[in-house]
Length: 504
Ligand code: NAD
Image (tube, rainbow, N blue to C red):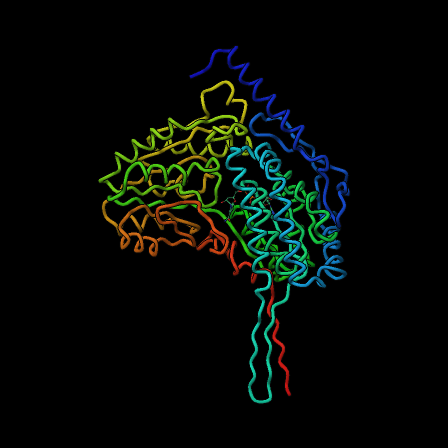
């Protein structure tokens, strides 16, 4: 329902004031490039605006890095590696990582508010991100010494197998969990002994820049460099730079393929964390309210802007009506609004482009005969229409081969499929190019294990969702990526193997 004009003005003024005051308090002063331990303008002197998606107003003007800036950052990183960082012992790096975790924790409130302003995610979720980012650094601090190597003594041959850092790595991330994704990249790279050049997403550069400020006194100059800017202008030269020895990318599958081609030019190792279109399979024995809660979180957490979002629901016929009615009620009860308020469940999407992209899929789904059980548009509300909001949406009746089902929408959109025959359901569940994650909801442990093994994906939750723990590898099958994050495997992605074969 559209609100009364005066009341809407008051509500809008309230939001604007809250965002202005928060921006004054937390937007960092230094929003230029961070290279060699200095904040510095882009060589071309250009900047771009980063926007608050709740108000659609500019938050800050940020340096627009290009190839010349990437080159400077890579040089600074190599200098830091050669003159200082390669001499740091595992214990030294452990101390650095622990101090980074501490400084994130100390500044958690400020970082969370900054993230909410730049990304639009609810403050409660931003707070979880910030603490998870600190936990990343603490986890990798804990395993930094896991670099034992191997030996083989045989006759007169004595072989040693050791791991060495690459030197300088290039890391490109996206906007959905800006600080958390930065920590997923920085922590293992530093733990393994590398220096890095990080390019944050153009939509959300602020938390990485603030992190650079916070760690300036902790990390030697040039070990961490942050080049803000656009994909083609800064990400592309970084991922094809001849002196980058390892490329790590998180983003869309389409760009991931380009990044892989870029890295191929110099035969550089890549890890890719890409898109998903994950199934959630509901068996007939479920407790309906509990299933509804899990499904709601699986799709609507972070406004559906999660690579692992459970965006295709496969619900057994016996419970389908009850589950869908429960989902409609849960959607009705969701608080959509200002993400700076603690009670908000669903904030805006990150940008107007992302709203348009989502709405195009919804229109196509409608044209194809999809039945919208909830949502389907922007909210009909004068205040919310100022921001990048999309209603939480539930669609039934689409063909599984429709683009809205096959493609990652990356928004608050859940597509429903009913099943009664397991094999046929599982065939559909796996009938996408992606294979990042999946969910299984049942108390029947045999069914749960069977489904978990049958879903072609790198991470399966049984009776939970989104719960990621450092130590448990996260990454995709099929076109969802190459490599694993969050675990000891990740350290190995940032090291290369050397064999020393000594003849005695
Ligand atoms: P995107 O691929 O467009 O952008 C991601 C990053 O790549 C940005 O920093 C961008 O500037 C940069 N970039 C763009 N073009 C580039 C180029 N030619 N060369 C180098 N860098 C370039 O990502 P998006 O579509 O905005 O983000 C959504 C995607 O990210 C979704 O597919 C989502 O599933 C995925 N994602 C995956 C994970 C994971 O861990 N698997 C985590 C979060 C998000």
